[in-house]
Image (tube, rainbow, N blue to C red):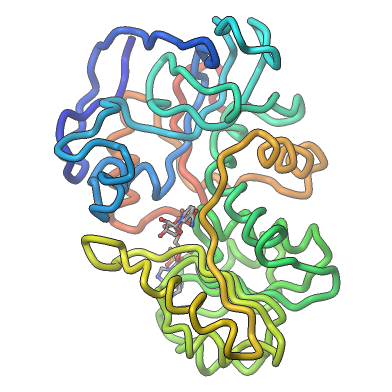
Length: 329
Ligand SMILES: NC(=O)c1ccc[n+]([C@@H]2O[C@H](COP(=O)([O-])OP(=O)(O)OC[C@H]3O[C@@H](n4cnc5c(N)ncnc54)[C@H](OP(=O)(O)O)[C@@H]3O)[C@@H](O)[C@H]2O)c1
């Protein structure tokens, strides 16, 4: 089968389009004929092996254990492991499959849900990694309530484009922070005020928020706290350009350590990849209250260009990799 592969860590120059064997499945996995895949920052981290903590987390110290790139997937089940009870051959599914930038991918049944019938494979290929992170950050961690004011810092990206729509669907009033070229996108997702991080220091925002999701820009915790109401909550999701070893996870650790001593609740999120969250996300996709913002689409043969686009920061929302051309739209 055709696949996007790498045999060492590095930037997109380590990637090649290769012919490789179809993956074998274990008893708790299914084999998916991939119709489309999605690109996210996590996939880039697994490609580069940075921050180095990624390698120590079991993905391969010297080289990637999984030579095929990609996480987000949508496709059709073509084989089922003997202990899998939730899926049958022919089911249309979406979720997370390590090695999704390929014609076939093996996935744990625990990381898949049935694809809502009203969305395309391409639309189903991009929401899982980013969408379940946004959902968990807003609900289980951020404890969002209807009527609250929410600020999403990094509202135009993968996590942010889902966070804005989910927060609106959950009854919040949402403002966003994004780059100059993406302000209109964030408005179209349901955000009221949108601030340009290239021209506005967030400390100058005059509104105050019950909940802030910090997804981009790595602003200091003190600056983010200055935008919270007296009992507001800050949830740190991530941000690029931290240090090589930990990616700067110290910001999250510092916020959690400070939290008991201040009126604000300061916390972080590490998303849990489980179908219960994917099924919750599917309800919003089915209802149409969340529509994946696909800013770019590439065929599998051009998937390396997709990664290059992400490296240069040129993505608005999500990028889809269309594997079966008959399902491109
Ligand atoms: N904790 C977890 O479990 C988890 C899960 C998923 C992702 N993450 C992490 O979360 C981060 C975001 O992921 P993503 O997929 O959403 O990335 P992404 O698609 O690259 O989006 C990044 C967002 O940050 C914005 N941004 C860039 N510079 C900024 C600045 N100086 N101030 C404010 N906003 C800025 C971007 O805006 P423009 O592009 O419009 O400039 C964009 O909206 C990454 O670090 C990722 O590794 C963590």
